[in-house]
Amino acid sequence: MNRFKNTRTILMVLFALLALAVPALAQDGGEVTADDVNAIAKKMYCPVCENIPLDVCGTAACDQWRDEIRIQLEQGFTEDAIISDFVSRYGDRVVGTPQDPTLRALSLVTPWLIGALVVILAGFGLLRWWRGRGTRAALAPAGAPASDDDYRARLERDLQGRR
Image 1: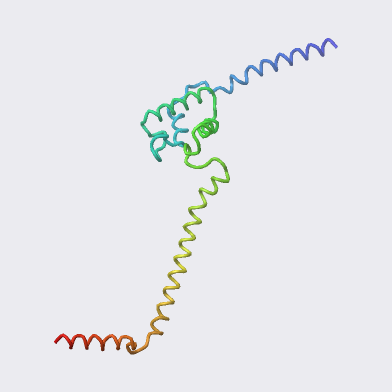
Image 2: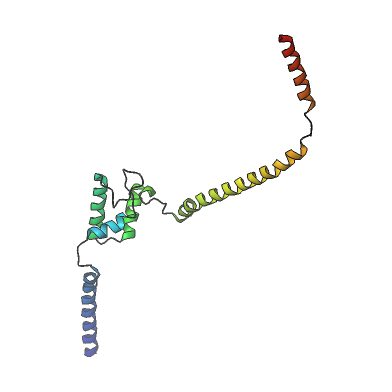
């Protein structure tokens, strides 16, 4: 029984040391570099300028956001956690596309569907115009219509009346 207690004590000490060592191993050990910050900032957009990635923008707001990213990286946040934090505070505009899978799919598929619809409608319109061209030429009478003859006769009378 005594031997069992010693083994149990040794195992508990080993587990305690392991529990202390795991967080130390998980830490990177190195400082957060500008490349680390820019890797995340490249996926986000400036809050002030339109359509300018955060990693290349020079506004004060972007500098503050990059500093915030650096601080969060130093605190051990992951890339997804940092982006989610910014999205929750500033909205989907930060990342350019919605984070919700349904809205993301709609925002990416809708322009393609609209483009396809426009091409199909233009094709039908062009086909209809092309077929209608031959039909109109076949329906036109060989001579001038009677209404043109009446108009010409009145015009001739008016011109003779002026002479």
